[in-house]
Image (cartoon, rainbow over all chains, first blue to last red; front, top):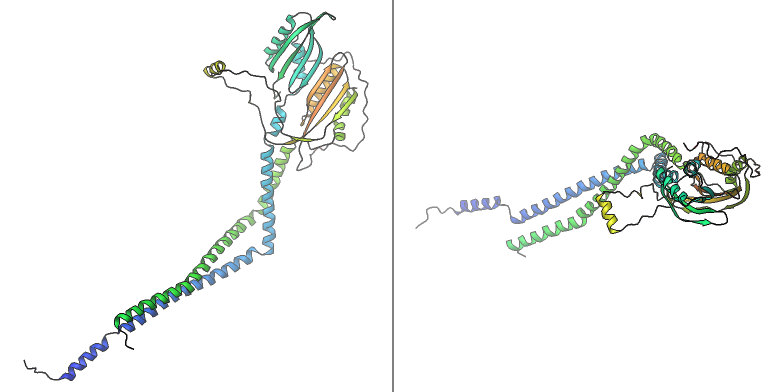
Length: 189
Length: 244
């Protein structure tokens, strides 16, 4: 078929125009690389600015913290806080200490009154000892029943944790029974 | 040299990886690392500043709190005596022995040692066996033998023993006088021999170092004159309460 339009110049121009309108890939790559550099650069710049701002703030706070007046006052406060803590430790260490000391059985007339007035008439004391919260009484009695009566009387007072005796013996020289009664004291009296 | 489209694309990928990688490695990451260090430093400093800002206005309150606590804890410490030596202790006892006309026969003093004080030295012995335990369990018996105050604190203990010649009545009066001291000086061991009229007293002096001086300090600066014959009044009643 025979072509009617033989004007190739127009067609050439149109193609050149089309080509000129199409961006070359190299240019696109260049633009993309530039964009990446710009974005990263901007980000780096932001971080640099942030860091500078933080450095300034750090310098400002450091100056405030290291101010000799502030340091002196804070050292004083720290010492006060340490002392309060030490006092707390002392208090916790001595907790119950006074209770323990106060609870120790007191050997005085109150307990000796009980021992004295509960004794049967014929019981006579010859030696009294208080040691390790136990009162040990060496005594003499006319009858063998005196010791058990005395121990039971003392037990009935409930003033002692325990009252006991380990026997008695008849002493021919004095004509009396001798024995020893042990009273374990309760604390807190 | 003519570069094909495919080669150009590969070169672009290489370039973009190289440039981005280099920027990350040599610019962004170091900056981020510095940033995180600075952030941590700033956080620490802000915390310190916050502590300072909250502490400084409280300085006077803390001082008041310290003063109050000092008095409270010192009062607790004063429940026990401050350490005293044997010569100072004599100034507690000899006026009493003189007052009751006791003749001091001998004394022994021990150096302070560190001890853990016990409320009770001696407990009644309890024998436990299977049937008793079951009976106690059935009766819901609670073992109260350990029901007394205990402490883990260590204190100083010195023991001073006096042997005196005295009547039984004065021996008892002396015991009561020591109880009235109401201090951490207590009689832990004592004996009385009715035949020879000789008594002994062993004082346990529990002491701890004090924070503040006692409001009523005992005066140890004056000389004392101690004497006694060991005699008493025959009318003295060691148990005047009549047992009631």
